[in-house]
Image (tube, rainbow, N blue to C red; front, side, top):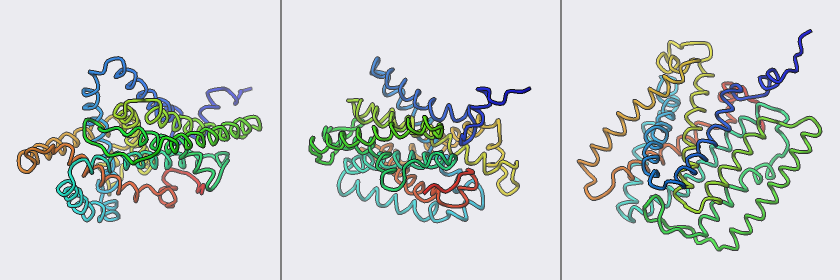
Length: 352
């Protein structure tokens, strides 16, 4: 008689968004990578800039390229998102350059600091919804309480960072919101209370045999990375690098998984290239293509802008923020998990 309750079967049968191996890397591996990065730089600060360069070229720029695999690598996607690709980008370019011209680079740096925090938080929210949608047992809290618990640590983190009033960020001038220390501390107490409630509710669910294991694991890492990046780490730039690595790698893997599920039936004649590199066993090819495109686009544009237009001003910073802001706006439109098409592709149920 075969025992179907073996540990192997138990883990394989959990409601992963892809499978146990992929999700283990996605949930715990990326957090570990961020933590190791923080420890290495803390031990040897001179490694910060080499690691930053590696993050930008192999994760940061690459994760932006991953966005374009969703909106312009096949005819159907390009037609659906034409404005985001063709119409929105010039608007972002003009607006960003205008801000730099009128107010200075520090305004763009400040906007980036706060917008990236919001963007990282919203991406994590969407992924948590994907895990929750895979498991009916994940519907513990609803409405405002559900969101309050999720956002408690990120909000505490950004308020605490603001209260610290750091004058620079990644070596550039930064203006921080004038948040009183008392407000930041109060948000911390609220976060602790909400997190305590969350832990107790999960323990109760475990005792009752209805714990959403995978969703709970993801939520734990969500709380952990935002705490480490914005609260536990005193260096604002190191904290940013840690969560930036986590966010970038998370996005790349999630987009590949989405494309893999989208083309689960094999190579699509209408999206031959994208569907080919998105098949099982070809994630290495997908990553290699992304890195290659990153090198061609970023290196070429940076060198051209440096030569033609931005004498005396860092083209890297300006271009990076233009691409970031455009990317943030695109993501806010294309990853709505309430869309039936995305729910069908990811095989998740509506959970809001």
